[in-house]
Each structure stands twice: as structure tokens, then as C-alpha cells.
Figure 1 (cartoon, rainbow, N blue to C red):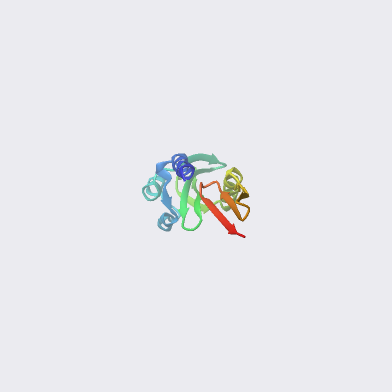
Figure 2: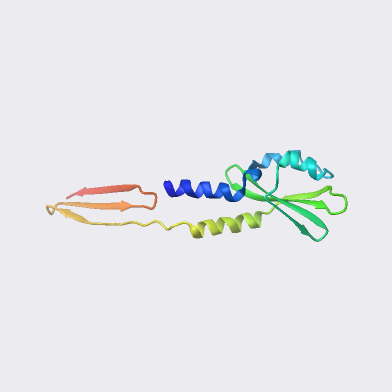
Length: 138
């Protein structure tokens, strides 16, 4: 449990407090908005970069039952007006795959303990620290 809490705290620190928001914020976006109008709605982006002739802002927005999804907002370089925004689902799935690969595998310790010749006990211990005893009486 402690590792899970530590992992959650690190994830929040990596995303940055300015990017914590929900997908509902995008409902207030309109094409042609200025950058200051967008920042009033969305807050500060986690990243900014130029891609071709567009200035792109990145936000990590929360979708219920899914998690943090990267959203990109592209502004026209000359007019500084919002042109388009989208969720990068492929980046989201790549990040999910990396999280799954980083998670520790479940470890079962099966000890057969024979007490007095008529009781077998199996002890199961998983990575969350939960211990389950299965006791069988012959």
C-alpha cells in the first residue's frame, strides 16, 4: 500500500499542479480563442513547443474510468489563435503499457506445512502485502 501511495505522489509531481484538470475543461474551448483566453480555461500547460507553423500546448487531463490523457492544443503562429485541439490516444496507450511493464509481478509463496501429519497449510503472499492462509484438514 505504501508503494502505491508513493507512486501516486510521484505521478502528481511529474504531471505538475498546473495541468491537473478534467476533460470537461475542453467543453469551454472554441476555435479562434486567444492564448490568454485558453489559459484562463485550461490553466498553465505542462509543455509548449513549435511544430511546423503551430505553437502547441500540452495538457494532461483526467478522464473518469480512464486516467490521465495527453491533450494538445495548436495555435496559429501568426495570429496566436486556437486552431485545433485533440487527445493523443496512442500516447496514452503507450504510457499505459510502460506502467504495466514497470509494475512488479505478483509473487505467490506456497509453503506446504504439514503439522501432525493431518493438516496442510498453504501461505499465499502477494505484492500488496496481503497474506491469505488456506488450511486443509485431512
